[in-house]
Image 1 (cartoon, one colour):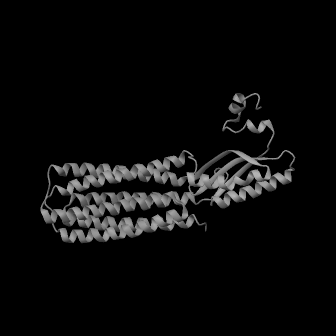
Image 2 (cartoon, one colour):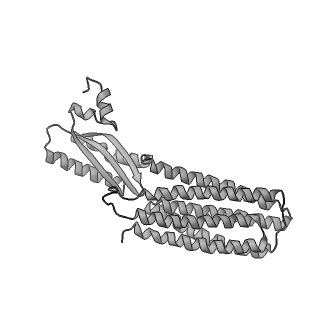
Image 3 (cartoon, one colour):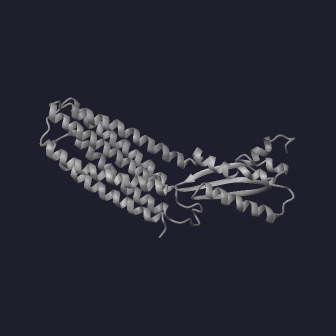
Length: 312
């Protein structure tokens, strides 16, 4: 069983937590009739849907490369990020609409102590599972687990705000605080949803690796000049946890194929060590061959057509 496949156990943990917290929050809402607690329970329903999506996408992403997907299935995790972000935004809209209606008809709350106790248990469960998912997501470089963990963490802060608000309502009798807090929660989780969607879309668009990883690659290639070599056309992208790095390796014109290949192996190993979980592709070129300057751009035909005739 691959390491990526074992990540599905975290998705099952998230599903179990979502079922438990939904049940507890609905009980708390039934006890108190708090719109804030209802909003919190609705967000947990989204958590359940997101956890099921995470399980599905992690299962797909764990599949090995095949004939139709030679680069693997890692990008499936980005779909989970987009869908989860959209679900968060939809949940925020539902919470906001319900709270807005309650603004004009504030209602007293019942059995606040019991309701707060039940909501507190649900919050503790969510907080614990969120920390587990976030640590696992960072450790295994899984956007799906990080997104699920962030989603649960927003639920934790939502619950904390709701519990605090209900406590203030019980102490002050200001019933309008309940829908106001629910509206604030809606705004907060909307921001989280937008951030998740943006990050996932960047992955689907083959955005380059982050600056720190690009710097690590450049450091690994920094001593090529000591061997009379150079490089250009460096391109990077990420597919789930897998990094793909390619560049053209320029070697002295007099080197044999064996010498050039040995240098390529050495350089690729250095880049893989600098950026873990990466696949490195190199294209060998004689350093002083004019044709080596005609294929730097992504589209070689355009580059050759517009290249400086002197350089060519």
